[in-house]
Image (cartoon, rainbow, N blue to C red; front, top):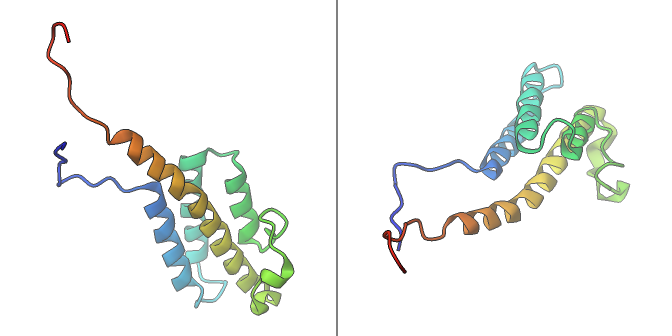
Length: 130
């Protein structure tokens, strides 16, 4: 069994997205003119760009969600949307949440696969014939 340095805990990309979803839940109770939306959106876009690159579809989907126009990009039928989505600001919040949750759902299996690949034996054989 390999020994793991218990002082080090790498934060996964999924953890960052989960934290953003949690922040979004708190912002959902504020008004649209609250300046924290701009900072939240900038932070989220930066995070997505770091993970996927500036031209990825997830970055574009999130940008559309910020203005409540992401239905076509994330295949949301109108019946699946919450009844309060007639209000554009609330619709934007709902779509932000749905886009981030969709990204997280896609990212989690990839991170699990990555973790499995990285947890192999971490030792070298002594020099000489095996």
